[in-house]
Length: 493
Image 1 (cartoon, rainbow, N blue to C red):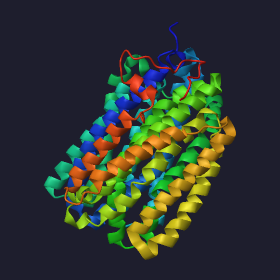
Image 2 (cartoon, rainbow, N blue to C red):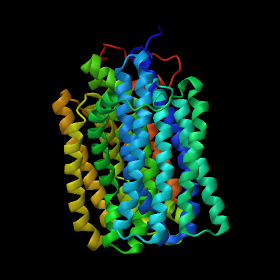
Image 3 (spheres, rainbow, N blue to C red):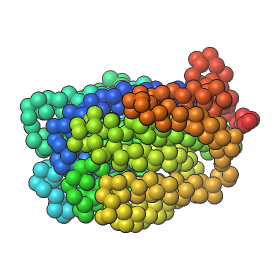
């Protein structure tokens, strides 16, 4: 029998290259998403855009349970099983997904009704919810691609959804459609993903749903804490706009929704990286805790670089980006996005630390951390949204993300020992960021030009002074050596 890729010498390189593949697909999806958002925001306007994002945020909470939460558990469990046992487990995963998706859809519609949403938002919840839950069922069949570090197919699915969404939005906007039909695009995207599954996994990869009681109970015992924790995390992430839809004006909700729409495209990147890394971290937690700590430290350094880069770019690009996306009426949302972009640093870190806890089997502790984070962001939003509107919501989001990151790191530190981002690395990031501020602070430059120069300077100076970790540089060279090896903890400078 061939060696399991998760314990092979190539595992680390596959994780890094797979992350770049998924991130590359996400960049393509981001570009498509920006075009989609531009058409959507300009067609719907501020208030209807706020309603649209509110519904998709509500649906996103269900996705965190039915798709993300259960996928994380399935990926981790498949990584622990011997290769011969994985097919039966996968069949039960698909069966479980069908049951949970149906329940989630009913609960989504019930919440929309109880909350007193207008008829078009209730109908939109049903349509969009059905679509994303179809994707969740398809993703259950695709879980083995994650465990086998075959990220090309998963990257294709991500781009496919964006392509179908863009085509649908453009067609409806040209037709002059009102709000409700736009939610049906999610259903079309779900059907497209389902149709692609057989081509991605092959006939041998398709399984019939199974509902074995013992297996289902075992999976639920593991999955429910993860799903609950991630649901709390998604409620936490989307709580501010839901609160704003209830206690703030439609205009301020629209500004925050436009900013959130732009942020969601960026937040996918750390989520994808964490998802790609989970099987390897799970194997490391099983075999060598030192390797796990080393991997988490390296991934955390990558998260810091990405978070600082986005914050620097947003400093000058936020306002023109929002005006470009939604037109001049969304110009005020630029200030909201400039604040909210700071949260990406903390989001990227706690995504890595979250999968570290899951790899260690400490998923129940995520319920505590996310519940405390939910209380914190609720308090911040309740205090800041009424007087400051969308900007107050953005500040509440950033501070809440910082609190949540600290809580998750605390539990990871207790569970696996000391894991730190090196002081020398942080010093190099600081130097690169300070140099990058030079073009960002030049008043005569167009905003987008200044933002682009700032990004180039930050990365260029960072490469020159050794900010980029050696594992990342090595993985980008096809024949380059990679120090991640089973049972070996590479030295750190």
